[in-house]
Image (cartoon, rainbow, N blue to C red; front, side, top):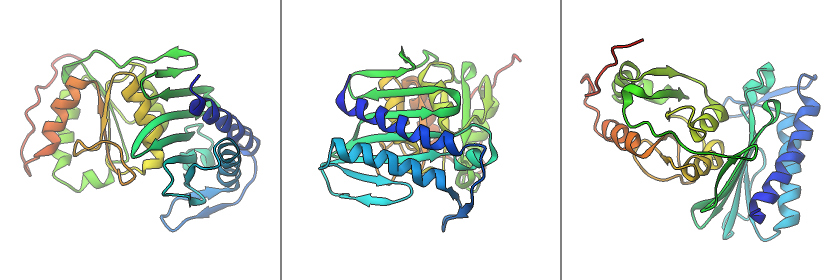
Length: 268
């Protein structure tokens, strides 16, 4: 196995132990400046991840959700979100994950996505494919929006922009629309069980690892402008290649008040 992935998996397992030890227990919840919650489990999990990564690769930088950046200008930079979906963790829904990705000179080259309560461990390495619980992942072959299952999440910014009309057209024109959110819709996308994911308000730490899962499974993963994942990325459009091109064209030039040119489905 790729040594970067192997190390990230060990780090994810170490975080899982800390997370599950706190899950459904009693803990204080703090509200950060960005109005998102943080718990002792978030901090303990990130500390566990950092310990594993630093021991294995002391020259690598780490950029984490809870403790910021160490050696941010290093050639290799680990991107870490110990609990992506802390709100789900706090409420006991199980909809949270640990995200670990390695960026080399601006490219994501290794990734692990661990969902502790679902027993899902996904990983990918550049040029080596994507895997979920030892099953190789492959994006769907859907090319027509009318056949597509679409998931959206974190759409606050889009709701106040002309792109909301584009999304409306997608919802009307697709086969099925749901808002699965968090790690879950990306795992399903990479496995070919879902066809499109759209988000307008994300942090790169939330989606860096997931972007490599999708691309190594054969999909296209960009922001809503069509740019690849970068540290500044805040939105997502991910889909099989033909669908991605169609949807990106629609999102690139939304006319205020105009109806997007999607054909609507006629079946149930």
